[in-house]
Length: 229
Image 1: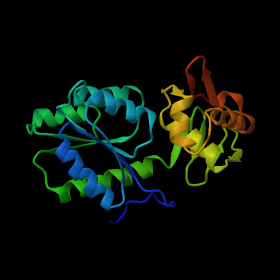
Image 2 (image 1 turned 60 degrees about the vertical axis):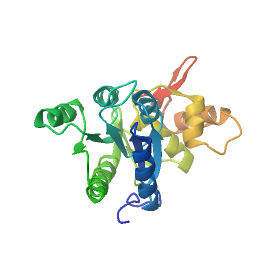
Image 3 (image 1 turned 180 degrees about the vertical axis):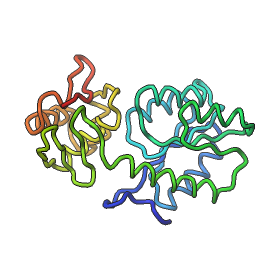
């Protein structure tokens, strides 16, 4: 598989499949994993929304006709939370009007069923390339997080290098700027090998010491969210 790793890293692209046809999901997940993608799955819109808002994905593939939360509503909610993840919508609805609805809701691409597997994987590669380009720099108020360099550039131009874990934590927060992340969710996403959730508080302290207290905001009783500089 060509182009499955992010430029300048050994990390594969992450794809979330939100589709209620379990046989289709199993087939697609198996194909994509063989080609090197990291794949997560959800079988209804509500679960897909939760995963997309709490974990970093490069592309989310969303079926339009989902249970619990419709695909159009799911895309609209993701965009309303300022999530920049690339979205490919799958649907059996093939009219121009339906495609316009999907794109207007915030989808980046639209593929009708039945589809050719080669076309689907080609579209995923294109969306992953776009995701890598968009993710090269993330905004933190007037500052920016430079992903290739693993550093924060402050508003006055000062460059602050980060450790791997400091960077990973800040990247999750910056990728989902309007999401309040629980300590448990951040531990699962960033510190999988940590024995307790207190490591999240430790690294928030490190980030604030290096970059400024306002970079991470505490939401009492819940967790943390991105601040601004």
